[in-house]
Length: 216
Image: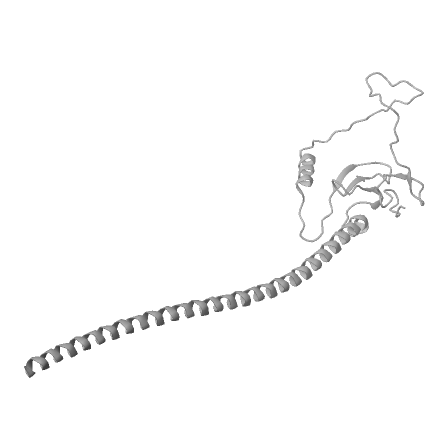
């Protein structure tokens, strides 16, 4: 009888131990799962915070670099604009005084400044009273090259595609000869008269085409 009771108690204790062991394993698994989940949540939160910090640092760095670039670019653009203005002004002045340079192979009195589409037309011999040749002169400074329009004019001249045309304008007091163009009277010049030589020049001329005196 005693042996049967002891055997029964042993079985009960064994079952109890097995139950406790299974509960321990289950509890341990639950704890590990919760710990793993909490660690994952903490890691994601930390990573999120680090990412935001990096984004803020990158944004500040980008703003600083953008500000520096704007400042440097503004200074560069300003310098380029000043240099370009200086070159253009120098070119314009040079175009007007170039007939008096030693490199100019013509009589300055024979030169007439146009500015566009070419700088000068030279009537060689005009001042001496006998025109020998008409020369188109384009002034370039530095390494500048001819524009497309200037090259077209040069090529047309080299092909001798040049003509003389005489246009007679009918006045109100007389009839035009047969075959001539009739139109209303117009002013051929704008009366931009030089104070030195008293001759008329083009409306927008800056220098007199006869004596090179500054107009206006």
